[in-house]
Length: 124
Image (tube, rainbow, N blue to C red; front, side, top):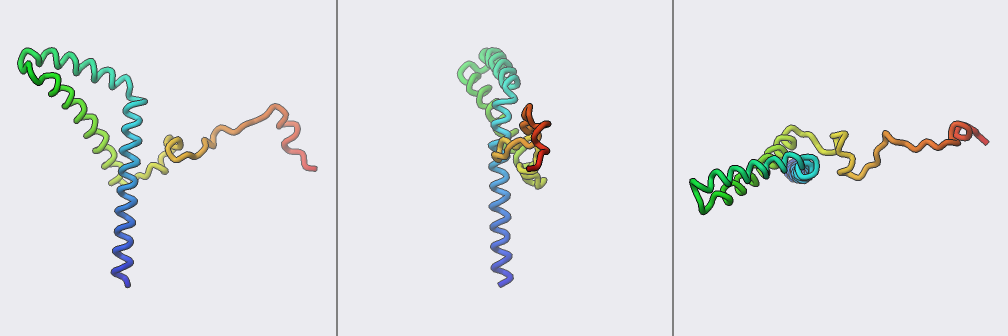
């Protein structure tokens, strides 16, 4: 019985680790695309200049080499970052600025109406 429970707990632990890794991968990819847009523009500029320079050295595959390298570096950065955050045990629900990810309302902003100071504390 203890062996069956241990195996079940391991499967559950691996499932939650995989789920956390996939959520981190999605979150970091979205953050790279949305927040890191200026970084993407700089990478595209650097990549185009590098492919122009490499065109004289390897004329056939300079663009393919540069684009493949940039995409590989971005994918590796997202996957390694997600792996590190998952292995550290940081779950996306523990991060305060990721409330948009799990659908919780922002509790810092509550509505205050103009008549509230006059009527909110009244008991009938």
